[in-house]
Length: 76
Image 1 (cartoon, rainbow, N blue to C red):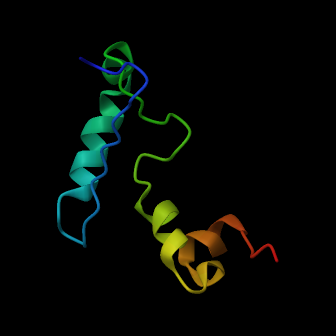
Image 2: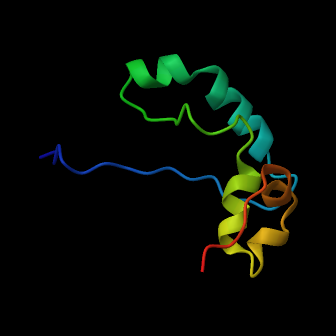
């Protein structure tokens, strides 16, 4: 019996050179197909969103180059 309220979350988390950019490029290019087939892939994130999520795990995310480029700062 399938539980319709249960959803799956697929994450590719890898170190550098583990095909992360290739996977993101492919998923990004196929966003419409994914949506039509009931897969969610954010249309708000940039194509390569590694830096966006990497900031979540830094001790000082405000020092990360994407934060600096975007003018982001720590909210106390």
